Image (cartoon, rainbow, N blue to C red; front, side, top):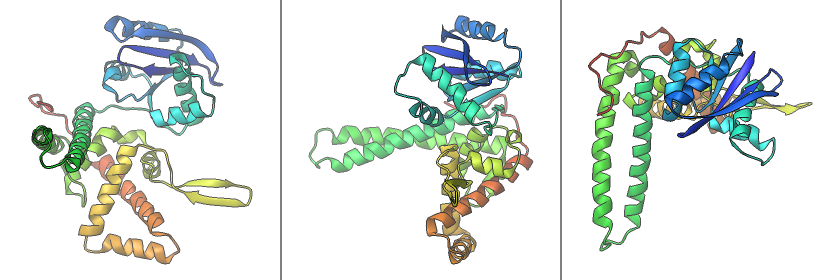
Length: 316
């Protein structure tokens, strides 16, 4: 199996073909145009048994190519940039697009448990919506912080207040669209305790097709919610998983926090019982997130994912 690893950029894409040992067989850089993408498909033809490793396959500037690959039933893996950077840090300081492309593929070779990408029809819409909502939320938080630091008579205070008003208006519109999209494609998610429209949108946007996960445990691991073993010799311990999809991990954290406040004490009792067994409060919370991940996976796997209506316009 040949791994075609891609380092994508808004203006160009660099691809390296690696054998199963991580040795580079060929590489190419193309422009991010229709002609360039056609060159990438031609570059792949000699490698009959192949798979694609793409750093940040959810980025908008590689979305067209990823869609083409999935339409052709190619095997595609999305490699988190954090995983690539960890691998790069172990191999030295030298850096360019060809080295980055090689590291993307070697990160996949070193992590065979990663699951291939299956982009369900509504996923792209929800990715755009939820990621835009996150960016605007971050901007709103930054502007509110800046406003607090200003003197009352500052000349720029009114300008920042106007920016905040615009951000609030657009966030409200985005959140309504996310809720409408969830109601259209999988309304059962919104019935779960602690799962609001934003969390549901993130779950569907970042999970994609749940069939790509072999079990609830694999899904929890993908979320960074399954503990990992660390140790050597007689010194062995379980600790937090620093990897995984951080957006899904954020969604699990929100669900856990809401349930601790709203579910009548059931989650609180779970934490208390875990602490009685010797867990710290943080370890008990991570365990709660693991159980929530498994519950959400079962709902995602059994829930019917509807197509978006033809007249739906997720943004605008």
